[in-house]
Length: 213
Image (cartoon, rainbow, N blue to C red; front, side):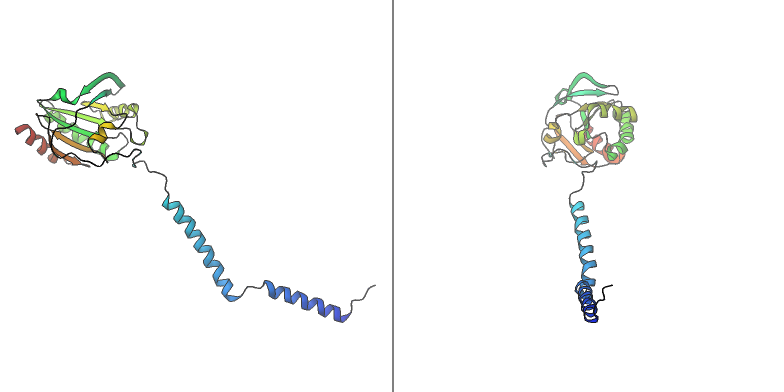
């Protein structure tokens, strides 16, 4: 049997003690490590928040910020969409010259546009004989003509609905959010415009003013 000398035992014991001391954390290190971990977690969270996934209400296309307030409304020709989809027909704004036009820009997924559907339905029942109602659906967030048709079925809209697949009419009218409304006078000029949800009285007042001018 090999006997380990006492000196060797003490040497090994001292060596282990030194190793333990070498890897023992100081008080400052014990405080610093949790702080570093918290900072790292916060940085990772901040990074994910600074680059969010686009929400359903965000714009998929950048349009001009110009908003019409006066002058002639830009003319356009767009395909007509019914509850069954594109009809193969088109409608041209200038063909309605001589009548007041309530022009709505909307998106089928837009909750504010959905809220406005029954309000417009009431106004259409009141003014439909003297005013042309036109809704233009755009392509933001990948909205399609089929989505527009589904909107018509869901909300039972009966006035003219068009689909602007390229977004060019949205751009020409400076539309950056939906819904947006233009009241166009009998002479083809912009009478008034509104952005966002509107009350029935507000739109009725604008329509009545255009009819009397």
